[in-house]
Image (cartoon, rainbow, N blue to C red; front, side):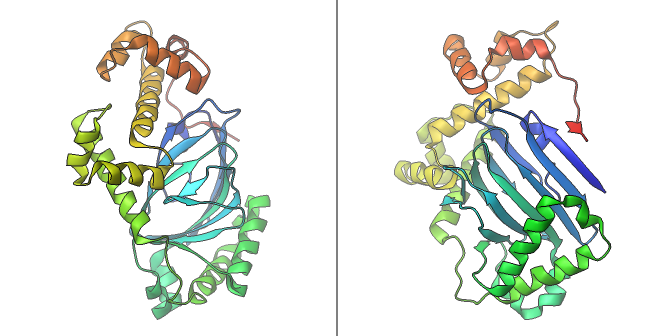
Length: 311
């Protein structure tokens, strides 16, 4: 099955990547929708797409999937796990991995989600060089280059993934790329992975406590880390300090609540107050700067829930 989604809001895009659910926090109006084409070929799921607006994102790889990601275009500011992305990079994201990303408008990637059991049976002991809960850059090697070529071709013609031989052939190529790696190849660094955990713990605390504008002391207590370490963790993981990240997160939550609200029975002030906002004028200004419209304009549009535009 092949499906293309054009998403103008983050919640329409968050589950569009095959096999994954991504927590997006939109950070600007952008110039167009996010686009993603997905193909489910059984043992391999394909997604290829691009960002039409900027966002920070959190992703957890399911425990039964291994994910290969090819970066096709990486505008300035694109990062995964605090590492700057570049065109042509190929990553393997191990099962159970949680990572954070800064994804500006124009970032384009092709994703292959593979049942880890399938990969493990074929790669046998070699797969154990890739610890779970890690993000690994692949290559350079002939095998990794072949996987890059395979993923680049299918990005141009996603329908080709529907051919009955595509999935088993791609699985063989992906397995070869994994087995060609040596145990000396390092993942993206324990310090950055630790930063990811600090940020994840901070986000979990904010969501569970309904404190959308946390103080630094609250974040330090929640993560059991010093103020300087918390600041560094956010900069490494998502490219901005915690105050800026949670401001963006609050704006994104505010936008979703406005779109879900009924202008006949709720107001911008009521929705903002429910999120703990008291400085309405400042919030409206930041909102307009981020999304190119006033909160009242968003509320008047009052969306009906859907899955984006299917083509």
